[in-house]
Length: 251
Image 1: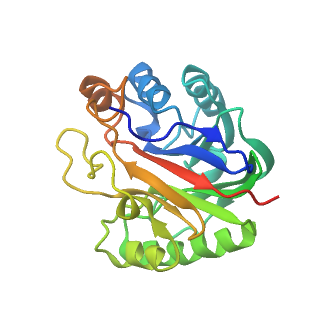
Image 2: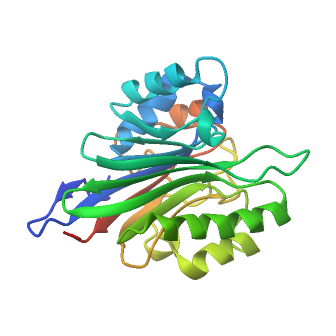
């Protein structure tokens, strides 16, 4: 059980980190179960989607972070839903919330981005929730890749709800430039939606090629201590994706 590496710093300053991507469904489900799932995953970085966006949204996000023993890094309503949380292991250089062009009649989308240092590794972060509409999704993928380049970091991680399975064109465009962590090093289960009977993988963690993927997938009671089926089904309509990554020291 839990053969996914724990977070640690290596002798050369490289960092092994645990990264979680999770659609929170606006925290409309069992908030305590959600916090328990996040906490059991022991993440250094959380890439969340559908964070609260309306009345007192900052307080809701901060409360969840505290329950999960994390802090809010950026995003939320100011990024149209994507949110970043982190452990105190991350040293923050900068954050930026990005609103994407609005297509009339469709939901506004955005990116929550940041640049952080963990040990001696510098990494760019981007949490996303892509459109349900195919053409808009394709445009957003190009904007995502452009934004990762603008972060100008030795390593980069993008994660989120892609609203598309790996055989789709937007997913394929992303994996032309980035590593799909689940494909590189499968661990745990694969499908992420819906929680009640998962039959699609529409949530993913992706990295630039220099990041070493040590394992990635959906945590289950048989692969991760502290995870229960009840909590997974009660926390959200999506299942989380957890990855262990090694970031080489960048000075």
